[in-house]
Image 1 (cartoon, rainbow, N blue to C red):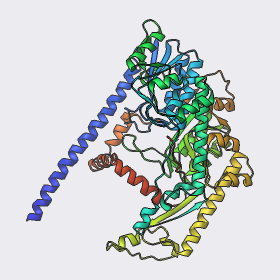
Image 2 (cartoon, rainbow, N blue to C red):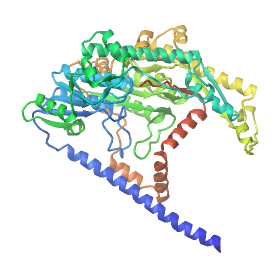
Image 3 (spheres, one colour):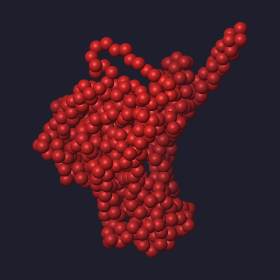
Image 4 (cartoon, rainbow, N blue to C red):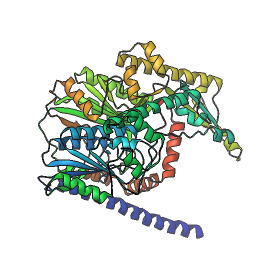
Length: 594
């Protein structure tokens, strides 16, 4: 009887909790609809007709491309949308200038470079840019790199100027696994394919250190050269400032790194004064939503992918909190654009460390089919387009990368972590019953590879590596011998990749659009319409789809999304996915300098 009442009241409690969670899901969905409605209303908001000063806050993180989730309505503008919005503002006579709140601690180098390009183009159109920083408090030079080309840089007088260079840290788990008798068994092609080192090593190998120092030095040199040019200073003077960091605000101004000391309210008033009589501040997001999206201009298909490359459609978190590239979804988008008579070129934006080998090859095939259909394919690399991310770029007609993009990593790896001995120490045992070939237990997490399994598994990886390098040789029109020299899993910056023939041009998103126009036979001065493929589902469509599922499914979705928000859960899942991924992986894990 006691068990009956426990079960009875437990069931009631479960129903109540499930109902509450379902209500929360409903609330969030309604909020999404309200957000979408507000967005529609914003289209009708009358902005000032003259004297607009756009305000841009770079202190928060941004996705490179908009989230595919229609419920992620509160996100900041993506990097791509920000660049295209500032481009539209360049020819808007009502926009006088741009006021920027600088990032204080550090950005991805390529994101900083994209911002720098946008600022340079905006100023070249005759608009002013005034930047205020409440401190360059981080040691990374990337925050300053992003805004060094501003007309004026303000710094709060009580803040610090601490950019000193670039730093990156790698965590190695080899010692931990050894301590608990776990066996990290991985095969890699070749010594520079360092993603596995996290699990197999206790520190940098010579190859790992060499590669990391090489691309970090390339990024540092690119940034310092750009800063010296932007500030019209001698290279040695800029280097001296960084090498002798930190500095007070007064010291930074004396060194020529900032122009004025003052609080943000003073800088904002100075920007409005430069904007002229009756100038008003307008947030760049509000300006974005006020712009009409329809046009009759020639169409360039924009297909964006960010995150790891996986097979399937890459299901998203409910609120766009899980970004990945699904090979089905991306391939279908490429083929849809190729079959659309209105599309004159395809622009593929890639921000990915790679992932599944077979998923990458599926996208590679779709690009070849698009080219065979007569549609030029242009790749724009963002912060990272390495390993599988480079695999899908290699067959394109033209590849554009930032000087600071991390790319290459032409290599493969695979393996597993065997925990059988670890569990045995705690009295946990596991046995397998198999029929068929010995290879059937190759992915078992309880036993180590047998000699035959390891030999067969390595042969499998070697075949994929051979295919990968040949794909690069064919796509980039390079001798296979040369590809073998520059592959071996090594990460390169975009600047290094240009010299090696792995990319065609150093530039940002707008340069990639210009290349697409040229290959499509569109005049440089003509406007184009960037049409995203696939079309994003509206919040109303997503709402209908969401509530078309059962209450149990809605409850489970709510619980899972809440759980996924926990940082420790995210970290654990990422580590497990990377370590236990089935099949051959084309994934790069370069230390991101900040």
